[in-house]
Image 1 (cartoon, rainbow, N blue to C red):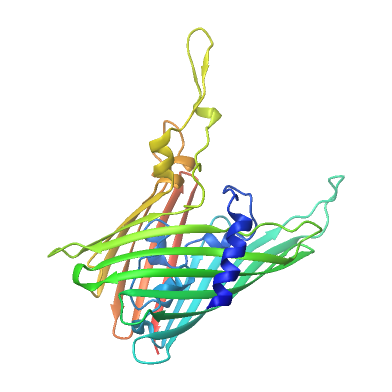
Image 2: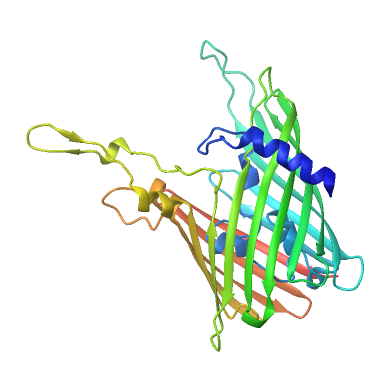
Length: 337
């Protein structure tokens, strides 16, 4: 644990000034890991249930309920992009220590190749994958739980390939009397050992905070997630939304303080979260703001889904809306072996 802590601190200092929006490589690591997470807005670190997929984004939530559970998920992403995850967890001892393993894979499909003169060459493909192992334990007899992931990442884009490693470190406070979960996670702190060409690139490091609670006497659980906590300004002005008055003066689009706070925020609601059938709804404010089309109702940022249990397996489905031109469906199966 001392090694993991030192490793994380070192890379936190290295990446604390990293920005979002295409500034890092391996962005597939930030895609939702399961239909339930996708339905709740695309990112969630407060799902405490029997699905081992949750450990991919928050290792501290690995728990005894996941023992001997296998989760397999597939998403038909945009265009011909195929994406999926697989996870398994195993209980070491009585309710306090759990290990898990998972894999994430994305295939970008086939591309037409051209040389620098515009002449057609052979087609090529691209894909990326990560393999991770994790461990979680209860801190003494307290209500705090800690977990860590070690992740190996590989990528191949045409003739170029790269290799990297990263760690996640998560801490959760679970107060059962209030059905309250508070979590914090440091994700994707790592290093690219082999670059695509000559220049090494940053990993999509981020700090995520979350809180969730079950309403008293009502079968509803709400989730609030604050992502990219290590960066304050994630908003940017959109020149297409600049305003021009009758005299030709331009007022630039300038997101204010409240708008910037919202773009860190993801909200989600689960109806009948502990039941055999449940429904999830979510809204991602940054996705909704950045991908909306002016003067058109596109429902960008909105997502929803459901899951249903049949004996020892649970089927899940989620639908996420990006704008009028793009949406995705996510399918998942959780098996008790």
